[in-house]
Image 1 (cartoon, one colour):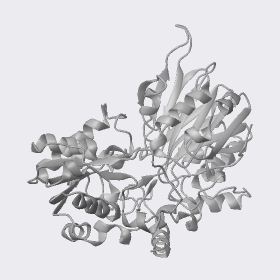
Image 2 (cartoon, rainbow, N blue to C red):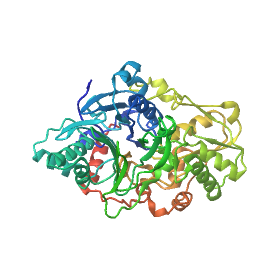
Image 3 (tube, rainbow, N blue to C red):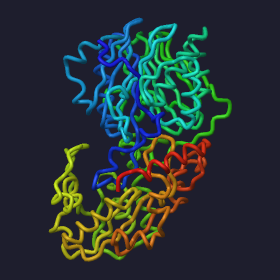
Image 4 (cartoon, rainbow, N blue to C red):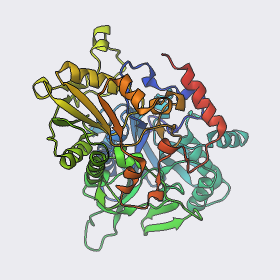
Amino acid sequence: MIPYHSASAGASTNPSDHLRLTSTDPVQSDKPEEACGVFGVYAPGEAVAKLSYFGLFALQHRGQESAGIAVFSGDQVHLHKDMGLVSQVFNESILNELLGDLAVGHTRYSTTGSSRVVNAQPALVETRLGPLALAHNGNLVNTSELRDQLLQNNHNLLTTTDSELIALAIAEEINNDKSWLDGAISAFHRCQGAFSLVIGTPAGILGTRDPHGIRPLVIGTLPRSTPTAPLRYVLASETCGLDIIGADYLRDVEPGELVWMTDEGLASFHWAAQPKPKLCIFEMIYFARPDSVMNDESLYSYRMRIGRRLAEESPADADLVIAVPDSGIPAAIGYSQASGIPYAEGLIKNRYVGRTFIQPTQTMRESGIRMKLNPLKDVLMGKRVVIVDDSLVRGTTSRKIVRALRDAGATEVHMRISSPPVTHPCFYGIDTDSQDQLIAATKSVEEIAVQINVDSLNYLSWEGMLQATREDPSHFCSACFTGDYPVAVPELLKRSKLMLEKKLPS
């Protein structure tokens, strides 16, 4: 069963595809949006499709537009992918038909115009050694160059994504008489940017991260079926993808490392000569689930810590601390603990509102963010409120939230952001605007406070954000705050992003 035999979705290779579907949303989110989650399981004798389903279910926060699973049984691969949430794309009947020993899965958040089934993942291509299914998290910055190389070598491109380019580059290297490992490594050297990959083959599963490890990838082990049985391995974007299927966290895939999972066990190869760790700091602040573990602790703990640091740096005279749910909650609790100001729920989130293409009525537009967040009037009435959020990118949603709090009776609203001002766009797998569309790149903190109508506004310092990791600060990418890109971004790519933003509807 191969309903969709095509490659899939990371960054678009066609600049026109970078027009975000959300650009016409009257309540466009202040949050940066990420691309996807990846999953892989090597477990002969197990229902690998169902394990992948639940792994993707746990990674649903990383992508809500399309999902797919490819299962290998010898030289045969069975692929099912479609638009929608994991629970919408798969059912018991479909999963029962996906039989094999290893599986690769993907869940995607499309923030580009290339929102269609053909661009869903895993990407599937044929090679001299058999089929290859690839799931990708991240963006390449040399897509134009790689695309031109492949077109010159007479490859047919079925999609508009860089993920297909990576898969075709691997196939090209393998077709030049290289092994799975040598072909993959040769292709990785042709790729520049951010890529965490899970790749299924008839011989086993490959997992890798780019030399900077910008996007995460972890390894887990499933319990042995018998005391003498071989270990079975799992790859996932986050540890929450391991927890849900009862897998034990083993370690992270290292930057510039390739892991190879076969009947013989787990093998490791370091293909990048001088890896320089640069994990995206927004994984710590916002993207990853709070129960996922990074640097030997849950991200909930880190987020509480930056909330406490924020209270120390930017105190406020107020009656209540509230959060923008759900992602702002840990930092708000930390702020409350450090400041001594009571924490309360002031906004209730409708957790069943997903992404919708149905435009609200004009009356609903005027009511702002009520479809997703509703204030508690009896909690807020007559209170001076500190509201904590993890980021403020555009200012659109924040302004509507502040208005809702004031309409509910809050006498003062003090906003605290548990990250620094976002002043530069990301090119490594996060959808952010061009620089002239980022509110902190064009306005001072005081000007932003006036625009969103708060009594005061403060951000966490860059130093505080990094020190709270308790790791080497140089091991994180914080380019969206500083403009210091660990992988050089071609000027053409920067200009194309700016030109496309200027074409977006107002």
